[in-house]
Structures are given as C-alpha cells and as structure tokens.
Image 1 (cartoon, one colour):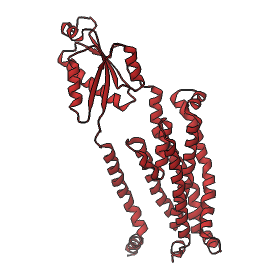
Image 2 (cartoon, one colour; image 1 turned 90 degrees about the horizontal axis):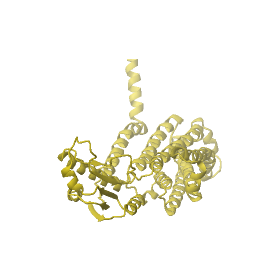
Image 3 (cartoon, helix red, strand yellow; image 1 turned 180 degrees about the vertical axis):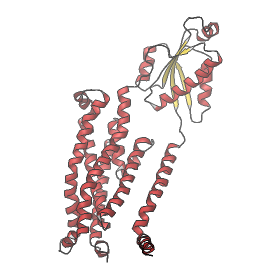
Image 4 (cartoon, helix red, strand yellow; image 1 turned 60 degrees about the horizontal axis):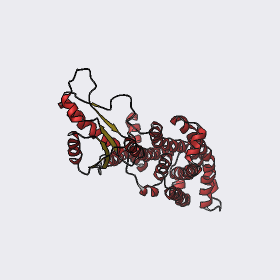
Length: 388
C-alpha cells in the first residue's frame, strides 16, 4: 500500500504540473516540426539551370546531350562553338560559362573506325567544369551520364577526361572553406550558448531557489534595473568566451584551407573580420537574456536547466538548417540567432552583404531589449517569483 501511495504521489505531482507535461511533449513536437521543415526545404523542386557551354569539335552525342537536358523541366542548354581553347577554359574558371566540351578531331569517324582492344588510344571527350559550383557540377553529371550510356552502347570506343589533365577548375581550398563556413558558425553558437548557460542558470535560477533574489525584489529598485543588473554583467563575462571563439575561428581557418595566416588575413579583409566580431557580440546578450527569462520563470536550477536544454536544441537546429539547407534568403535577418549564423556563413564564403550583417546585429539587440523588458515584468509578478 505504501508503494501504491508513493506511485500515486509521483503521478499526481507530474500530472498536476503543466510545466512537467510540456517538458515531456515538447521534444516530440520539435522533432516533427524540425524534420517537416527540413524535408520541405530539402525536397523543394529544383528551379532549373540555364547551362552555357563552349564546344570545340562536334559529335552526334551533342544532340543526345541536348535532349537529355531539355527533357528536364526548367533546364536549358546553350552551346557555342569556339576555337580558342584558352579563352573557353578561362571563361569556365571565372564562372562565366558552365562548362567546356572538347571532342577530339573527327570524333564520330574515329569512333566508327576504332577497334577496342587494339592497344591504340581511343577518341576522347574532355569536359572542363567546376565541382564547387552547383550549376556546373549538375551539367557535368548529366553530360557524363549521357556520354557513359552512349559509350557503353558503342562497346567502349571512346574515353572521357582521360589522363592527368586537370578538368575540375574548382579551388580545393575554396571548397574546404565553404564546408567550414557551414560548420563553424554552428560550432561557435553552441560554444557561446554553453558558456552563457553555465553562468546564467546559477545567477538567476540559483538565486531565486535560494531566496536571495527575493531579498533584492523587496527593495525599491526598479525591476528593469534588476533585469539589466543580471543581463549586462553576465553578458560581459560571456563575452570572454565569444572573443575566444572569434579568435579561434580566425586562427583556424587558414590552417584548414592550407595557407599562411598572413596571406589569409590579407585576402579576407578587415571589414569581414569586423562584421564577424559584431555578429558574435550581438549573440551574447541575446542568449543571456533568453536564458535569464527562462530561469526567472523556473522554480529551481534543475527545472531551468531542462527548459534551457530545449532552447539549446532549437538553437542547434536553426544553426544546422542554415548550414545544410540552401535557399535561405534575406528574410533570415528577422529571425534571432539564425540571422547571425547565415550572415557569418556568407562572410566566410565571401558572399556577404554589409546591410544584412548590420540589420542582423541590430535585430538581435532589439530582441535582447524586448526580452529584458519581459524579464522585468516577470520580476514584478508575485505569482512567478513567489508562487502566489
């Protein structure tokens, strides 16, 4: 009977507390929303590409390639003949053209006369492209698929991109930089959140649990001052972690890409570093304010830690969405945290716009001010602070 009483007591405690019920339900809701959003973005139909391709030489395979491209909705292919190979290669390198295809002289006749196993070099097709560019890589994939099928039908009578010639004009360092640009902001946000969480929970929820915060509230100090008295110093302390993250990112990128720190800093530019620092600094008071509000609404450090963990998961998801989902545009500037992550990624890839960075910083500061105001109102509520 005592066991049943204890079981009943625990069930009663759980089901009579809406906060505990919400804590149990939220993970499932988050998983559904997160995967639904990511699925919507990732399975979004491709808008298509307008391929511009240079060509030297000719073959019946060109008509097959055109048919394959135009059979895909939204895709078009424009082929221009050119005799100057260097001009064509430069255009592909600079991103002005999608690709450059070279058919060896008298390709179709040579293919018809070629005997597999003769030991003689087979006729060749060369395709110059950029693997780091989605459009160029998409064309290359279609072209090689069509040409491979044609080659198999002819019993391997020609070769594609034979030998040690460099056909991929994408900079390996740039590709690595783009990958790291997607991962680094996520890592930075998580580090900053962890640093803010470690110092804020004890300062707000801890004092509330011990009753020391109530001592401050019985005085005539304005509640806004109490809220600011928490957010400002905690933000300053957390800035140490933010600056450390910034320096770690600045010093590690050159090593990852494989260049010297001096050359990387010189090519990156002072404005880019300045924008990065501003974005990181704008995140600190925002995250501190968010955790402070959650801690104010919680009765204990343990409860606050549970809710904050959920918020941290949401923050991680926002960062991951920005890292692995394409199509996030200028609208992200109004979404807290996500705006800074997207802006940092754009800076690291060299495609940032100054106004988006500045608006993201401003919006994060505005959100911080609003959250501080909400916290002040919560501090004035006897029901929240004293459970009355």
